[in-house]
Length: 113
Length: 116
Image (cartoon, rainbow over all chains, first blue to last red; front, side):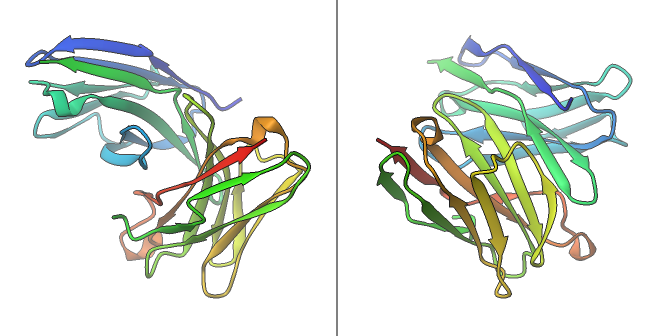
């Protein structure tokens, strides 16, 4: 079935260090991979996304890589700051006539000052 | 503010009851998506509507139903409520693909449903 696995579930880093979150998807029909940041009690907000025909994308301190063959994609945050602390979700979208987006279980990132 | 509105913000009800959650998409967005987020869990895709028609379905229970009206607002109806239905319900909207959209979904602030 359609599934997205996300690791780790919790990640604690020192301010200034890098953070890496990894996801694996199951449905090879997935063609779009967004990453969302969600602060406590608030709405998910898109921070970066990548389409299936691209291997890597960078936006300032955030980068995402995609390995279609292995069905892996990862989020890299460099020079972490305390305000990066939040829950991060990866997702994979399957185009089925409509759009079905399957989310990972989330990674709670703590950035210690 | 994403431009997507949801009402009510909070809803407390009892088991066995029925509730309706409402979502207004951003101006110009034709697609509306509904998601359920239980405590400390990820988002579960429920259903997508595009310009009034159902387009994709996820793990939506038979007790739940949705519709999108001609003015493009959407409603999610939850009936025979159980304790386990307590969750945050988000809707999101996106632009039609032909207008440069189809990818990014803009989320509303959510409706927190508590079933006692």
